[in-house]
Length: 306
Picture 1 (cartoon, helix red, strand yellow):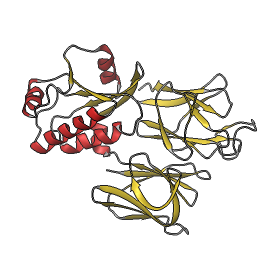
Picture 2 (picture 1 turned 90 degrees about the horizontal axis):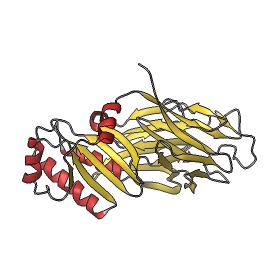
Picture 3 (picture 1 turned 60 degrees about the horizontal axis):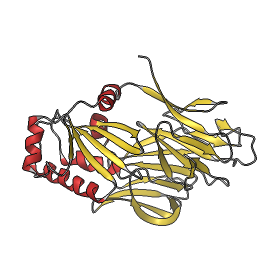
Picture 4 (picture 1 turned 120 degrees about the vertical axis):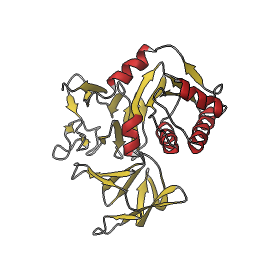
């Protein structure tokens, strides 16, 4: 089910709202009103006054996963994932020789929504990608699901993305033949130590931290981590005049960390590349994060002992 996540610089606690009934209106008591609706297979956001959508002023526009809307000083992040589906089979992502790799464990009874969710997850990432599908559990796929899988493969063929089937069962192999796509994707027949590691470890509970020689802060899933010069507002604050009063924000949504540059004068950098202002940018573990000319941080993952 799609969700939105709301916070502000004055109230960094994240409010999560399920979009279970559409259209849905927000901030009705404020001068600016935001409505989210679903029409013609697209999610739309509409305001009664101009608002920012990924740093563009609009009155209405199509929204996609991780899009950032700002109205009445409220940061609103749209999460398009079907939570029930993604919790079951999206295992996360990792870096491998310059590629961003996504790992999914397909359920026994898979439907077309699964492949639509996969598409929404991987297309939000830039650059070269690898899509790994562990499919030994699959027992049933109808014609609509086969069509959705074929559509996803056609999309990846046009982009910098390769599809790899892993742990292929005889049942899933028969579906590949039925859809005539067996030769259009790569098949991993031997056990891959790295994939096995992530398949076993993905369900472990963990925290995310940003770390450098001077700081080590845990990202609270229920609260945005604000950075800047304003000590009263920012959990991570600097006296460096190159840092803006409110420089950036980091938030955790499910198992994903997003960073937002809040219109800083001297920019926020990920792996030495400046990111656009007022856009929710996804991070990978080990990414290097720099605020203006401050020493860089790295994003780390820490397993929680159960």
